[in-house]
Amino acid sequence: MTLDFSIIVDNWQLFAKGAVLTLVIAFISIGIGFLLSIPVALMALSHRWWLRWVSGAYVEWFRNVPFIVVVYIFFYGLPFAGVRLPEAVVGTLALAIYASTYFSEVIRGAVLAVPKGQMEAARAVGMSYFMGMREIVAPQTLRLLLPPSTNTSISMIKETSILSTITVAEITYQGLVVQGATFAPFEVFMTTAVLYWLITSIFARFMHGIERRAGIAQGGNQNRHSLADKYLQIGTKRVQE
Amino acid sequence: MDFDFWGMIGAFPSLSRAAFTNLTIAIVAMSLAMLGGTTLTILRSFGISIVNGAISTLISFVRGTPILVQIFLFYYGLPAIGLDLTPIQAGVLAIAVNSSVFITEIMRGGLSGMDTGPVEAAIALGVRPRAIWGRVILPQLYIRILPPLVNELTTVVKGTALLSVITVIEVLRTAQQIANTTFRPLEPLLAAAVILFALNLAISQAGKHLETRFAARRG
Image (cartoon, rainbow over all chains, first blue to last red; front, side, top):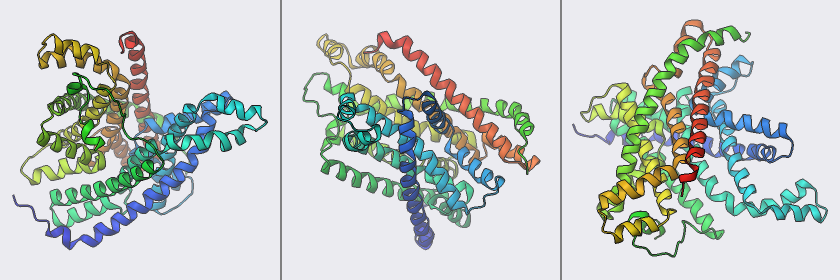
């Protein structure tokens, strides 16, 4: 068995088109998803039980159902409700909503990590709840928000591959097209995987750069040296360098 | 077109039966992944630079690429290099490899926060490395990382639905088959969603129950 990567070179335009669409869909759905997640997170933090309940049901539902099922439900459900949109739009919408539940958990965690006294002080000096959130709590969550948001965004970039099942012509779909025409599955899917790998690694590196600039330390800088490090500190030196 | 509520209810029996396939695949894949994750973790602790380099490349690759593409690689790609697998075998293997990588990362996180005392004591007493792993570290570690492991199991269950694209007859595929005969895709799909939701909810609730049971033993 010899591997023939010339078929990849011959079909580079399809892969390039797919990569562009993947990037566009990921960018838009992560953006919309993050915006949507803010009210969801605020509802989860509310004092009113029914707001918490609605937000909890929304989040739990989407976090426990596979994204592929969500995509199909959107794909068949929207025309059912009389809304006809191009597949790429349906996919972006489904991913945005799916992403909003994950981002809302990130935001909720970050807000809860800000000491309670901050909000209490804001209320004590006469700010409203929303003003306290916006002026006092939100700025302090930013550094807590960034690392988990990067991880969630990377997951969502990867989830875009599932849109291939509703014929959105992103990278994975183009991979299936090329594999159908060339019957060289190993080369094709290896290339597909490497494209995603490039996108996610470049994105991760870019975000880590921003994190460093924002002064967020990476990894636990534990200044302990122990006999047990041989067993308990696996690969940390490599990561920190 | 009206929503056929009874059509949705009618899909439940056959979908529930199909859900056992998902559950079985998930359990087999998760067991393999626990084995794989533990092996990778112990291998990494030896500090052999070539091995560690290879493992970090594997981790980066698996974490940086979609599981759907990994499933395609195993299902379509492996036969091309001479390894023929059935759809279920390819699917289980793909999910297991994917999950091994996530589990070894969970274990790494768990290890770095563990109390050094027991391990130091074991080293000082001259306990052999094999026993240090088997008797000192792993029993504590598994209890410690129970919450993320349960979370990983729900991710694995979600991954089993992806195997419908490589023709494994599980919940989602069964729902599609029902849709092909009734021409009503939405009802069976919603039923499939409800079943997978219930399955994952049951797993996370069972996880919480176990967590409280082990709470006293967690370091």
